[in-house]
Length: 266
Image (cartoon, rainbow, N blue to C red):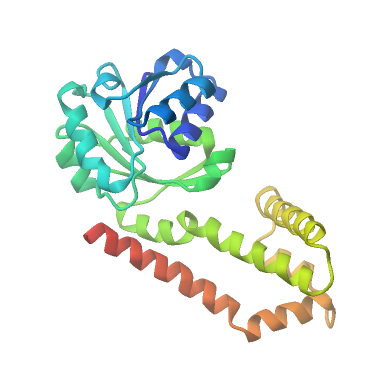
């Protein structure tokens, strides 16, 4: 399978590195990146991967074209690539807010799959959702899942739910980082050296995530298991509930979802 990536930013680099680590031949991978310094960096970090300044130079022999540029640049990049885009190439877009209808108009006649990944893909722990276009087959979805699966898990949803995915997992890392930041500040407020509080919180977030992913219990069950009646955790949770943390998280996911819908209509 020959894969061409349009856009060599952090997410694009993460995908390419994940594919190489997953067994793809670097010679079957190519990336178009307009920034010269970024191209030089990619050449050094991804030996064997073809790096070019022009999208039209990398898509001509591609089986899959991954659109990984910023949403405002999608139209111009696909217009440049259009004349050399193979008829049967799958177009897989990770550009937030660019709808399947828009992508199908920019790449007429090609199967399209739209995806919403998140930044933990940078450490091969991403969460992505994919939605098929009108021409996409199960084989196309399998291909998209295989590619994005190189940097994390992949779920399939209808396009109408991608905004909810954005609000939940797409924006989700920021919610976790904010909570970690607050926990560190709480440790410092209560006498811990910042370096100590940081190390403890980072490991707490990592370990808690592993319990969720690798264990058989739900988040609710795990939370209950660590909360002894009348204990320290119960006191902390009572303070969180009193300050509306649960409601705030619900509102955050809803607000991010609605903002994603607004951007899609813009």
